[in-house]
Image (tube, rainbow, N blue to C red; front, side):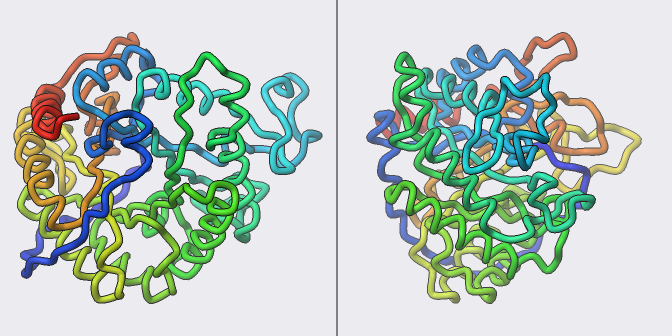
Length: 383
């Protein structure tokens, strides 16, 4: 998912040991689509591209699950209907006590359901009326109640008994059953109050209680942690985070392919030390940026388009071979389509495909590599 430029530390430590884990399966999603959703992508600039066409290309390329943001600030930007500009009121309906705009999320849910791609929403970004500091970028919520209510609103719309399915009987009913609670709160850009762990764990517990009450069969996914993710996990556990999530998530960013696996192993060891070693793990972002150019200092995981493809072709098969050992259920490439412009942010170059200024989409070398790996995995796993 797009982010402001941050100086990411290179995670290239030689981490010792081999730490096992339990792959408890991914129930429910297989039943809905006939395929176990293992290999996925994040959206990137997908909503600015031809959506239906790109989703068809995804499905034909072995993508079974899409991780996409739901921005709370975009869905509920106003505290009351009186605050909504008169010209915009047709877009909003009252939900959870606040004016709510479902238009963009409806579009994405409908498109994924028609194609048969399992959607993982990442719910983040506090609207000003609910923020601890309305004038601080990345402010966490002032409390937990408003975010928990928003999670209920989303399940009332897209869960098993959601109003979306009643209002759109032509759309195949594929309720959303997995919800990721925020993104990378260890970074100031997403969570301005640091240290993040105590406040984030409180929010996650309130969100999980709301999700389970609205849909007992739904699951919550920890916000993925980048950089020294094992240390962020340890901070979450010290803050009482054990049991606050159904699924742990990390973002193992590093330059060397072999260190992706080492980061996963180190995260699994941290989970075991906390008495949580049997919990499933999802890698909700894995990538290398292709933005490396002569004459500029590269980011720690930045390389060239061809080398991006080569690293993908090594890393994902390595993760697939070891996923049962390490308890990794899903792997998401960050991201499907990027603009490949503006070098201030390396994730602007991390896509498998490039969105051109004229709105057309062109494949990059990494797209062919991902497609080969994903379709080969699909064949071998009988998907």
